[in-house]
Amino acid sequence: MSVNRMDKLEELLAHQSALVDDLNSVVTTQANQIDKLQRRVSLLMKRAAEQETDSNLNTPIEDQKPPHW
Image 1 (spheres, rainbow, N blue to C red):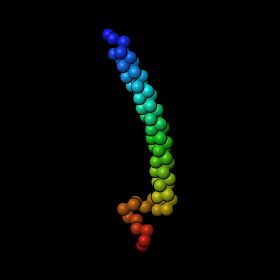
Image 2: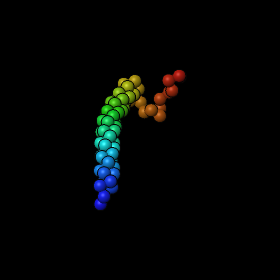
Image 3: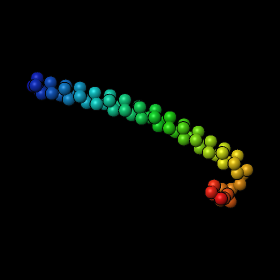
Image 4: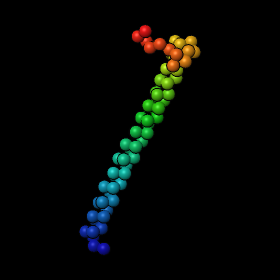
């Protein structure tokens, strides 16, 4: 294997390694954001359920009048 070819392979490997590191960083950031958003959605769902229970006194949603009535 020639030195020139070896240099090209080492350069390619270095670029791929940097790319993998960059992608890993992106995936880690996105995973953290997804976890945060899932916690927020869960909290909002709980709050909405509590409001529904408090405001409707356990009346099923099908039997409730729309807010403009």
